[in-house]
Length: 621
Image (cartoon, rainbow, N blue to C red):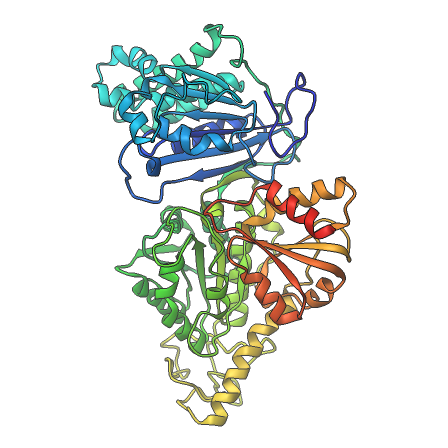
């Protein structure tokens, strides 16, 4: 079997360093669950991995249609894995629509495993096939293994008395069993999970386990030869420690809790369901023992308003949403900026505008994050580059919010939120705490609600503190006293103070580093957010080929690190790949007058390594 797109491995007899597998089927076929359990087994086998769940944009598209296809891709290997892979080595297609929408991504010579039982005329018509591709020779450039998975599943679960519809729901487990055999994975973790999930319905658990075992046995005993072979991928080298798989949504949730603990604050999360941000609310609701209160509000405005109220009361207020919900929260963000209260706002970006592509990934909210409020309303903006990086970014967002008394926006996207990767669980004793002290008594010179410390942060006072009463609200405040004052001179002064406070965050974030390559040279590829993996791999390949190219990845979008302008000008050319029409490129041009060149993609899919590699070769001359 060929190696993954992340790896060049010409010796086909040697164990591959990495393999990319994509499971695809109807949104009711359980492909996300199959991929998730295959990921768990892969992690337990010691491989490094990265995943890409790809959901339909509609809640429930008609069964068997092209719009209803759900896919899950995993890249796993014995070396460092940074992306979910460019082209799958193996495509598991559960119906014609899954085959049609995914087969062109499969690398030449790759393996197709298809459920021939689903390739009847009705499903072929829904997928707009004029003839059966399993029989007409149109798949000749790939290896094909087609057999009736549906019937094999029905045979396996027949002893358990399930109806036909319920029995066919087990075919994802049959497929998973075959995949576990093919890649030498253990079944027991999946069996344990099934017993736990269906503890109150043991007959369902037993049927699914029977299907899992039957799929595994089929691989062992069918003696098909040809493309059906077992592949062993050796464990990746890793430092000793405690590891687990984590998605971006889980990592953000844990990072917010860790940040609140380091700040010695209770946390209040106010949220409203929206794809793909809802998972943060679901995860945080499980951690009440860490003084976390979660609240599902009636709408986006109520969600952020409740979080602002919690911050006013002395807790760490947190809210999250995606682009449309962030737009609704805009006025309340201005209130938090005017009142100068700490608040963390998580934006899990998705394709837009409007409802757009709810389940597809994009990076098109950078303008919204940096500029998208009425008035001069500056706010620090941080962008996570991977699921595990989201943990560190969440802690950093909390630190900035409480130390500078400001709202902070943390950007992720649908890819980061849903994707999983191995995470070395950190030792929290190694993190420097930043405990918050609420003001409890006035200074000798008197109480100034809008007096400033060295970071230009005003004091944080819990309501009801004796002798520290003060006004709070959205109308402009007088410098120092906080009285209502919308005189021209005062507004000028307060606007500049709020601006300078946010710009001052750059003093505590350190200088921008070069992730791969040299300080200065012919070409810098500058990215942010989830483009990290494909950029890093492309730059690594380009450097291996002798090109003078470096990778710079920006975590602090606003304010940018102090050395950013000097660093960018040390390169002859700057290339900015991003999943929008050029938003970071515009910000860099605006701030540093560098001729940054865009590489844009707004297809709802992550960059391929090959796409960035081609752009590097074009720009390197």
